[in-house]
Image 1 (cartoon, rainbow, N blue to C red):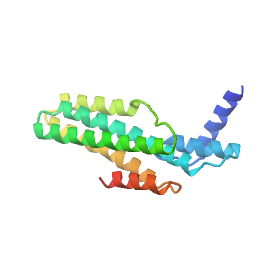
Image 2: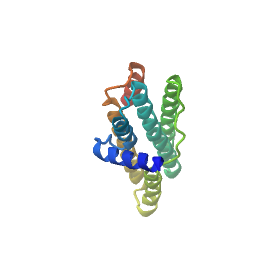
Image 3: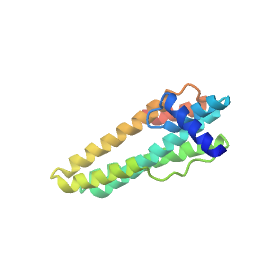
Length: 173
């Protein structure tokens, strides 16, 4: 019964707390902490933010790899492969920061939205004559999501200086 009550309270808290864009787990933790009178530490906030960016980075990496597989032009294959490699390095750096904060990075696989985005990219290339344009447009849409995730992360007030520096550097690239 206690687990059910906790879930109901967390659901209610999540609805009453301002959302953190595509990352409701941050709002959920904030609401949960308020209900139980627990303070959220800066490390808790940093870990939630870093894990959210890791998920976004993994989605970006998978998206660029899918795009590289779909385009016929070698220059675009090289571009998308390089972007996938860059996103993979970002994820590794974020995971290392989580380990430095004495935690374990989330190993969450692809989200439903990410899978749908990649499926749409594949579908769009098969149904249009301008397949490179369709892939570029979908990559841009995915990149917009990544930028939004980094902006939201940089908007967090309670991040330590090292975490903020990593996020800022990734955002600028």
